[in-house]
Image 1 (cartoon, one colour):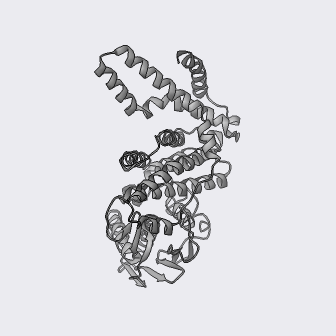
Image 2 (spheres, rainbow, N blue to C red):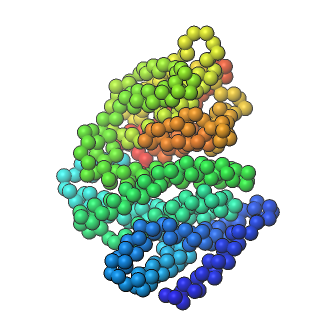
Image 3 (cartoon, rainbow, N blue to C red):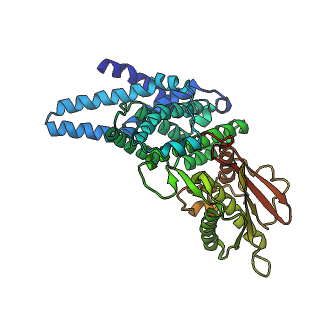
Length: 443
């Protein structure tokens, strides 16, 4: 083991020294990909592996202290350090998992299997996650490796990359779950990883903003972010569904709400956004909901909640900023709900002056803000103080609408808009039902 450590540390030191050297501008712009970035990433991962395994090391150190044998404790710690370093240099397990296809489930299958009276369904759900999560995480790691060299080396983006590698090793090294007691322990690990990754979207937004001047191919970044954000959504939905199976909630089977009412969701999110608007401007437009507002059906609430909130934030801001200098009350934001056998549609209509011709094609681009603000001191007020469980702070990086469009596409639908310059804009969210009668998206 000591020989292995001695063989690795010189390479580790050399790579660390390379990271400290300034990179010439010509090299910075070069789209060197995959393995070169992976080596530098691995070097940083080796440096930070102790932090990743703090809890395990503390446990080992505590055991050694209790036994009164300091020599054995030091030997155990050295072995663990060596294993953590070598595991990040040797990523053959990640390579192998990344070559596998993910097994995606329809919402209908989650709904109907979750209604099974057999308690072993919870065990089968855990066993599915144990096979599926490492594969999906390996796919994301592979995408991080494929980023242009200078982007992949951004400290914030590299931190997210490290989080995924850490999660992969924790999940892939976990012993096979064979009974409900082991499932409960495994669920605790999954719950902790969900909490560890809760800020990933904000970190990605910050990281890509920091290295925006090095981006030569915006399409590549858009593809990466669309895929990463929607994959993250799918992973979180699967994990939260599994954790929710043990909970008894009226009108819910896991994460699937069996009586989802778009009108009620709009009421709730409009009240939340109105409070933010009042805090910022001292006033807020009223919201009028018409159409089939009492419609109720089975659906997964979380992604729809995110989309509705983001579109409302833009509608409120546009309405106030366009009309606050005028005499009289603000025009209403009108929301219309339509429902049929195939899909449901939500239309958001504001009288916020519309979207100018020269920026209308850019509003779904990452890092573009309809308020035209890009610096930290001018960050979006709504994004800065948002406290929603599913809509975390985005720091004004222009991720709200593009992420909403990506989510809508992931759900098998679309988010589109029509604008009338000088009058206002209409946004349309169209999503298919998940009742199993027609084609549905897969999680």
